[in-house]
Image (cartoon, rainbow, N blue to C red; front, side, top):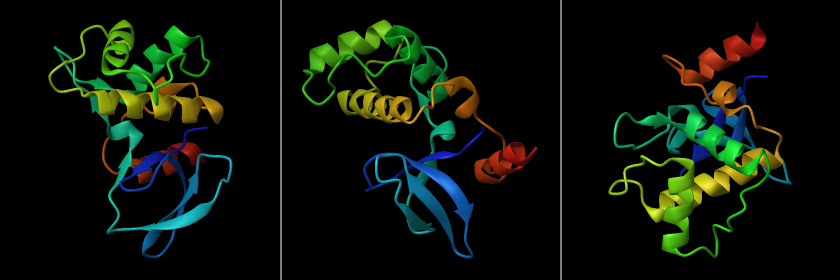
Length: 150
């Protein structure tokens, strides 16, 4: 099922869009709690489908980067402990996943966040990244709700 997976600035983890309310979005945490909460226009919300990683050629959509990571890890959680890994370990590991990533613009914190998000998604059974996180034109939330309804 096509769903909108969101990152909310200032809040840890990832969230799944449940529905729209009058002046907010209702999201559900992608963790053990599955807690639902409203997100307002003042919150900085980004769909993972709108995120791309810098490479030496064209920017690569996050869904494709996560798919490469899934292929490297055989669909399991990341073998690298992103919390304890050194900067060199992070860059070496990510170079195996995406050899032509832009080393000047992709920081260690970006790699850590990517690994954290990957683990959250895998734990929640989201592994078809190419489809789930495919970029859409226009307002992603509406586009995805219409696609899911079809």
